[in-house]
Amino acid sequence: MYFLKAKLRRLGRKAGPTRAFQDELFLRLVPKPVVSYRQHAFRFAAVGMASLLVVFGTGTSVYAYDSPDVSDGHPLYPIKQGIERIEERFAANSEQRAEFHARMMGRRMAEAERLDGAKEQITRILESAAAELDLSVDELKGDLRDPEKRKKLLDQLSETNERYAEVLSRVPKGKHRPLPPPEKMRMRVQQMRHAVGRDPAIGGDERPPKSTNRLIPNP
Image (cartoon, rainbow, N blue to C red; front, side):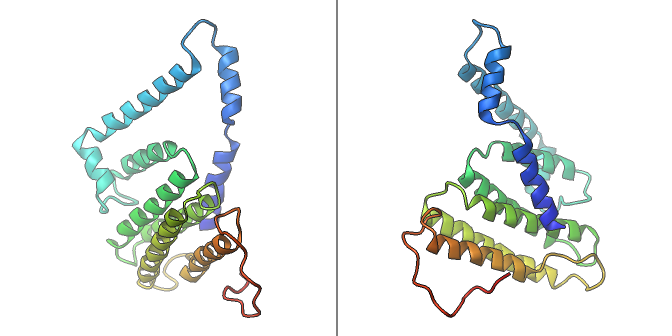
């Protein structure tokens, strides 16, 4: 299930029009001499930021966003999700998106840690946390060239995955539908570490010598 959630979000991102298409369409549709596209884009971004500030301006919204007690099933949870979706729209490159998804996994775990393992919504929260890990690792394959930043994010994901494993251990077996195993998620992070070390395109300087002892088994 969590793989499906991650794939749907990736497909949604890819299905949207490219920036070049949007630029060309805007130039064709908007008559001259109106404001330039850069001015329009800046105005649009300013409106989006202003909307975010308006949403954050209410005490209820601030509480909904900040509190881990506001989780799946809570009346204020749609507000929290709406603010997070606005945040995601402002993540403009692979580095920012990787950081965003890693942070979202931490937020989901903070919510899950407050719940009784027998509650139904903990399943959906843990699935969302696993999907965020998957999306963050995917973004780390992009144009993030700072090895320290990449290592920090991988360490953060590893630590959050341990929290995931601890919460999952409190979920009664057979009580809910099967959840992503933390071992599989841990392997995902380890494979990314391995790729960083051996692939110059991802950030490694050179490939290590071949070894007969595989540290990472085949998935």
